[in-house]
Length: 203
Image (cartoon, rainbow, N blue to C red; front, top):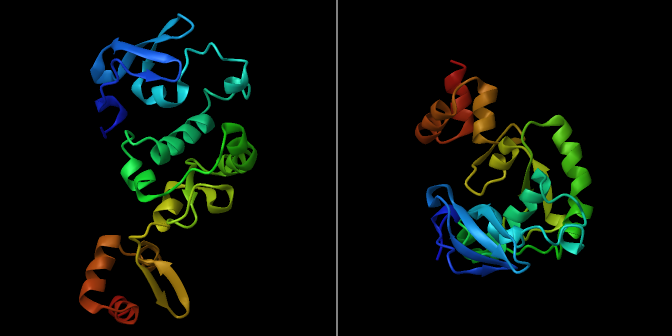
């Protein structure tokens, strides 16, 4: 069953050490869970697939890194789920298309990506992970940190245009020419080439 975490009925499922007893305000995606250690805990649906315990393993291998509450750890869980969990809303566009998550553990992911994450975060308001090759897997060699704007430039749907030996995505050409993207695309549909667009704007 696919869908967002809040749309899935987890009742009766066992996830890791947690048995999902019942929903607690299902519109908010909260679930009452009982851990195999005997403790009960309420978790959001989005936390179920990578939390998997009440926290009783904290201090042991699962939580020895001490980062499970950080944004960095949540990013790790998010990309892992969309590659490996068929119930995740993003799975059809990632794992469902054969894209793999190649880090074997959070510690491996941290060792490869945490230093660059902190460096990128210092100078940018938004920090997301992106694959350099959109057809490639999630691994150190194919991943980097980028802003939302930088990620948008790396999408397959972007149109790259060359003029005077320079190549940019269409939205960057629009910004450079001082017109809106909508106006630029309208002229591109009518005029077909960058040369004609430039001539039209400079008349």
